[in-house]
Image (cartoon, rainbow, N blue to C red; front, side, top):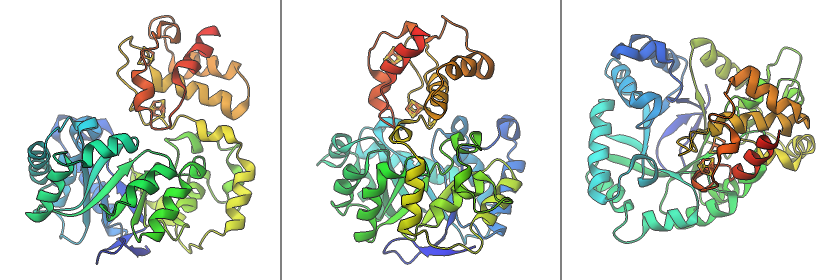
Length: 369
Ligand code: SF4
Ligand code: SF4
């Protein structure tokens, strides 16, 4: 395993990080965390020392699962978690402090190494959180009390907005979505982080499963016949010297092995290679749904992430019939119940969409089919 310094801090973190959002439900239901803990310890044995979690992940169990594993481990790893009004409903400085106390007790550690201001969707939201009297004051107070060591930004904004947020110098690291599909959208943010000596942790290297689901389309990422698209996509992120950690959401030991293999004999990506990859990607690929699920909870009961996943098929193949076959055969969504036509255009989903997708327009196109 290779290690990189986390920004200007004294911490050296593994270039592959453990994303704690994909534990298998059958392996943690009824509060038996042994199998999940085994996976966490396996990853640590493989050299992974950066563990990322959050409240609400895995039905709000992820922090507890991690804590269950951590109490059996030597404290030679780093833990990252998150909070914000937008996702966890913390509205005041004191709410944030209470949240951090809860995370500490769930994680069974005496401090959090990297605490994230979570899921900042745009600069307006950032300004609200960081204004005088805003929730960011809770982060500063927690740091003063030694409950957290470093404050990082977690964002789904575009590169230019990320640059503006980082230039405030409030953060030592940034967590952002970056992969072989959407990287052009956030390149500016990466450049800013490098200039400001801010650590960069990337999430979603497999595009929410989109990349391995389309082996043929992403074949160009592979370096040889024995390579897999999943490995190639992880390597793509890790091969950026300015990316400190590439988070992978692990479900099994074989996935841990695959990620570790992906970064064996790693070489830095060149500008020429990035240009070649861009040539394979059309502009449209900045507009795929990554399946993050933030738009879930439509008042009309529309299964937005599933329908947007179906629309991805059209973007990738330019065949509209693929949308309906995905809806009918893969997702088996009943139409009209939960179907696209019941959208009232209230705009709730578009406001939170991490990819800024025109969901209402796409639902209209799907309804017309
Ligand atoms: S705009 Fe349509 S799909 Fe989105 S939340 Fe409102 S009703 Fe649901
Ligand atoms: S539509 Fe947007 S918010 Fe919803 S799952 Fe896709 S990318 Fe995420």
